[in-house]
Length: 117
Image 1: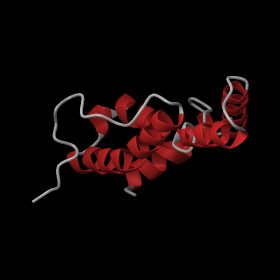
Image 2: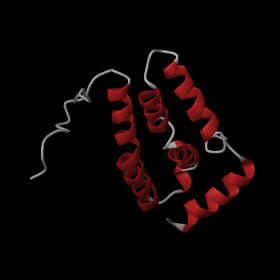
Image 3: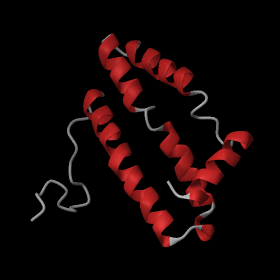
Image 4: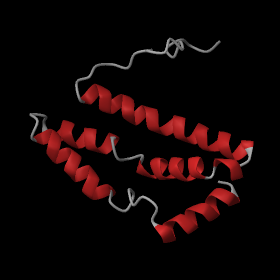
């Protein structure tokens, strides 16, 4: 992690910009409860809540990066994007499947299911 983002994280923890991470357990339990009351099994409701909250730090970092985009180097921006897209979409894909919305599809026709050559 670069020094700029590390310093920003320290300052952000003091300011509590969004408070998502601090409320992660509360958010996760509330999501689980909502899905349990919507005829989902306890396990599926828990799994959905996990996949919708495991990346709360990523959301906060996204907000920090986007709010300071003019101050970041190209390397800092690309580093963040790589980290974000390596983590968040997998959770969203799992949550999509678990909620019954079906499998992930290539809606943008970006050939996301084709193997790299």
